[in-house]
Image 1 (cartoon, rainbow, N blue to C red):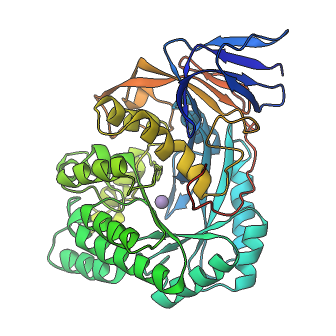
Image 2: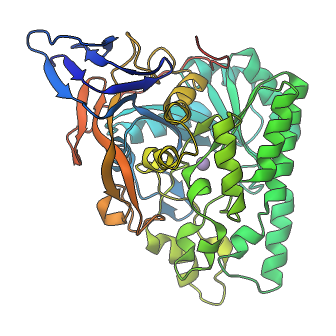
Length: 465
Ligand code: MN
């Protein structure tokens, strides 16, 4: 591989926005960022005049290949990471789940097998669904999985109690890891779901009605209180609502290290979609909310109260979603729909939309989508900036490039798009993964298996200089 010189663009990363060229060495690392660099012999020159040059996106919350009930997430690590690359994301962190009774390290091996065809670099989070020993936590961290997800919902399969959350937070903090939490009050939600079914309320909108925002707020408060009491940091995944954001702010104001992630679906969609004939295609958890929550979330991003944007990418074929309804018509209900939305390809574009609309700055966009997730999940020094020595995961972003968000114009393995009919203005033009061109003006030019497993280090919770 020869080196590449990306010239004429505006570089945006943690060091600010400036007109600069980016030199990538033959080993796939950034080696120089400065104005007016001259090409060396044999170097490929890429023109980025009039474009932005940014560190590749880091999507810290994905689900690829995952079996869910009787079906499977429609994107595997090949199709899912291709789509990510086409949209300007060059690193993903996927969630391993260790189900009750299962050895977490064994579960991780299963995921590593699935992830082999990845076209971009990938890391893994671990999800615990029961109490675990400190030795297990230490082994995961040694294996490069430094973040642990716990659920406060889904008691049948995933939820852990408050004691387990506190104990895992304590042990994780001792080993330099970070707990990430799904914040919804699972017990109350189960009661509301049972009540709805008993009353014959079976339609798709019940998915949202039985998971109210106030129960996300309650769980977020509990999560931050537990973190505060044990002296640990906590990362809130897929925050969807204003009550949750209020709790995050209150905790931050009293000095708790709470980091919040939101997702494009909570910034661009609302609960009315569940009442559509294709409403099943909009089932995700936490559910889509009333439109006013979106405004609060955009505001929270601009103020720095929200730390990252990830996707919770979890697509299903429409037929698989409908299976719960199509089988036994009389027994069909909203609880049978596999939940999750496609989004791994559209994240950078949908958040850029907030830059174009003046809701956030271009620097916010890079921080939320690339720098902060890299720092938080132990990838700083390698991912999330265009400093010398970092991996040359580089995106040339064209603010004028248009991209339809219809399913057939995108590359995710899914037959519907939550954003059908919309067009983004501003999209990835060229994308490099460790110096190798993987997406070129709408064409995928990477290769399966190029992506490497990322052994992640400790969370970096302080601002970087
Ligand atoms: Mn998820």
